[in-house]
Structure formats: structure tokens, C-alpha cells
Length: 474
Image 1: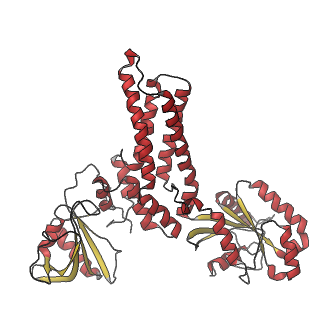
Image 2 (image 1 turned 180 degrees about the vertical axis):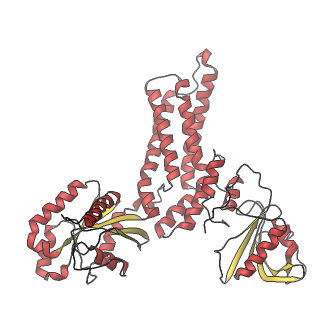
Image 3 (image 1 turned 60 degrees about the horizontal axis):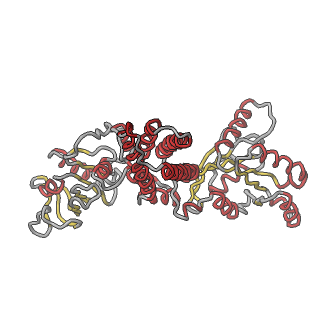
């Protein structure tokens, strides 16, 4: 649904009427064609004939639906339902008309071309939402959340986008910016009266505010580590020795033959990746090459990639064969401790596979040797539910459940990072008791970066980059 159309010219004054297909292109039961602009209602009225006598769409009430035909002279193109939304109570803040027609590709194109031939312009990607932003119906962070909401493919990514779209994140930023702006005004006032040596801003209050802002910005930035992986999927590396059952586990989780399974050691030479939604959370599983000493050049490349994937992973599933624990219990514990020490910054979950090779007494005894291990049989598909429950716990989405603000947009993270840097420079200036003029520019920089998040400060390039990635029709 993405388009490489000409970039949006955000400096234009939007007075024209735009049109686009708001539903996916192609044949379906119903298609929705959307128009927005001051003349949208009157233009549609020209080609609309009501099924219930003469009806003027210009005089109907807002948020009403009307049955009739779209006409091209005396030719009926289609029987439609027309929804009317009048300014300012619409998505864009302008007059909007949505035409619900039958989903024939021919009908869609006939209606689109009818209006384009009569002075309506085809909308650019995201132009409806851009107009909503420019008309003050939403701020920039909420507008970006619209795109994230459309792209969400799991319950968690949907919640994050919906939370941002409701304005929780924007409200926090606006409060911080407003408080900082008040003090900045007093600092600027001091500069105007520099010769009189007059102080308007209480330095103690100002320092408290700076510390509060720095703490809040740091908390928001820290949430990005969680927000980013929840939005894009939590990467999980499945590692272990050859023939320990890594590919079988991936197939068991996905419930399909995604990876090649063989008794021959070293079958997996390259990482195989696939996604699975568990309890509303998107996990990206990476089946890696078995770790061992080998002279095979190609296999060694795969093993090198295994270690690279461990570095990228949020969570590591370390598979250990049950028969190896049975025969080499102490050695296995030493190897596990070595891996945990090497990757101390990673969550490593030990998985004892092939428990179907052990009897009940052996399972009971061997489980105690590996702390927090989960017992499974990938071949028999046992233990899968317990594993999934543990993965959900380790995803740690408590802050999302508690309605805490979670940052998931990399542009917002960059702006927060830049704002925090400027705030810390201000803090240094206050601590060193330097004059206001030396840290006033840092205050302005902090305000600038916070304003970029909500759109209080924008550039044509910024808006062009954001909205060019939207669907046409939204």
C-alpha cells in the first residue's frame, strides 16, 4: 500500500480537494473512496442522485449517510452510500465525503477518474492525516501513531500505537516543554536587562525543573528498548550444539516444517528466521547453526553468524540435549555457566530437549541440575505451552499493562536524546554558576528538539519524510 509518489510539498496552502481509495486496491465486496477539501461536498453533490427524490448534500446534516447513484451525465456508474462529514468535525478538519461503492476495480476507477477529470486531485501518501495535523486535529506524534496503528500486527504493537494516538506521550512532552518555555522566557528577559544585572528566574526552582525534565526524558528514552522490540518483534536466538533439536523446536513452535531437520550434524548453515505471535506479543525466532569445532569453511561461517545473532537477540534459548545431561551432567553445567558469563547482558533460558529419551525418575533428578530449565520434547511437541508462557513472562510488558508511556518511534528517541543532552548542558551551567547567556542557547536547543516530537516545530523535509511512508488514502 506504500507509494513512491512525489514528496508532499508541505509549504503549500491546502485549499484544493483531494481524492483517494481508502480501502486496499483490488476487487472486494465494498470499496471506500474518500474526498477531502472545502469543495468536497459540493463536488460530490454534482454527480450524486439520491434514491429518495431530490436531495442536496450541501444542506444535509453532518455525519449522515445517503443512498443514491453516482452519475456521469445520464450514465449510472454505481449505486452507493455517501457519508458526509462537515468541517470542522471531521478527520481532516475539512469537509469530507466517503463514497461506499461496490468493490469492482472497474467501478472504483470509473468513480476516481470521474472526479479527477472534474478538478479533484489524487491525494499524496498520508495527505489526509497531514491535513488533520495542519488543521490542528492531532499533533505530529499522534499522526505518526496512525501509521503505526495501521501497520500493527500484534496485540502489543496495537496497544503501543493506540496509546500514542490517544496523546499520552504528547501530553507529557507538552507539559515539559511548557514549563521549560516559561523559565526560558524569564532567562531571555534577564538577557534584555543584562546591564541592570536583574535576575527574573529563581535559580533553585530552575535547577529543580531541569532535574525533573532530565529524569523524565531519561525514563522515556529507557522505555524505547522495550517499545522498539515490542513494535518490531522480540528477537530470540535458538542456540546449541549440532543435532540438539534447534530446527525441530522452530518447526514445533511454528507448527510447520520451516527448517530442514536431519540426523546429519551441521545441517543448518545459515540463520533461519520466522515470526510467531504468542499471547499478543510478536516474537522473531532465529534458528542458528550448531556451535562446535569444525574444519568445514561454510559451517564455520554459519557458526560465526550464530554469535552475531546472539548479540542481536533480546532473549537466547539455549538448547541442551537430555541425553547429554544424563551422561555429562557436570560438564553441561560448566558450559552453561560459561555461556551465561560470556553473555551476561542477555536473558538466557536453558531448554532441556529430547526428554522423551529419559524416564520419569531421570527427568525429576536431571531438572534439578539446571536451574530454571524448561523440559521439552520438540519431536513429541511436549512442553511447548510452558515454554510459551515463560517467553511471555520474559517479554516484560508490565509497563504497557500499567499504561506507562512507552516510546517506540526511533525519531522520537533521537529527539529525546538530543533534548536530554541540551538539558544536561544547562544543568552543568547552573552547577558552575555561569551567566545566563552562556546556557540560554542550550535551553533553546532543548525546546527545539521537544517541539520536533509534537510538531510545534516542523520543516518541509521532516513532514515529507514522515507522511511519504503512509498509505495513500490515509
